[in-house]
Every structure is written in structure tokens, then in C-alpha cells.
Image (cartoon, rainbow, N blue to C red):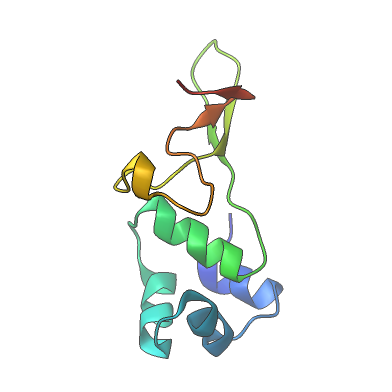
Length: 97
């Protein structure tokens, strides 16, 4: 995977466009590009601001690869999640319960 800077450039987006889409200032958008460790929700928002979609896969030895199709904001209680997002992962097409 290329770095976030290269991904942004491939997507044809400027820092200002990303910052605007994330409702943050330009230096904060630049900082996200340089971060080594971040919340998945931050990475998801950044990827969506570029017009992409974040997919997460889990690879285990001698097991089929699992693709997490949708994940919610873990810090957001289900009743406050809003926007119709699920708070539990949907793994391999099954909804977590």
C-alpha cells in the first residue's frame, strides 16, 4: 500500500480538499498523512474524503481470509450512532450480534 500522500495524489486531491471534506484545517490534514498510528475511524474518514472506501481483512494461518465489510465507531454507543451505521462489524457477510 502506498502512503497516504501518494494515495491522495493518485486520487487527484489537494490537502485543502481533504481538510474541507473532514472539516479540519490544512495542517491537521497534513498531520494525518504523516501519522504512523491512528484510529480506524480517522483512516476511514480520510479514505472516504479521497473518494475511496476502506476495507479491512484479517489473515490467519490455515484459515480463510475474513473481510470486514463495515465497522462502526467503537466509542459511539449504539443509540447515539446515528447515520444508520452499525456499531458491530459485519464479517464475511454475516452481521455481528
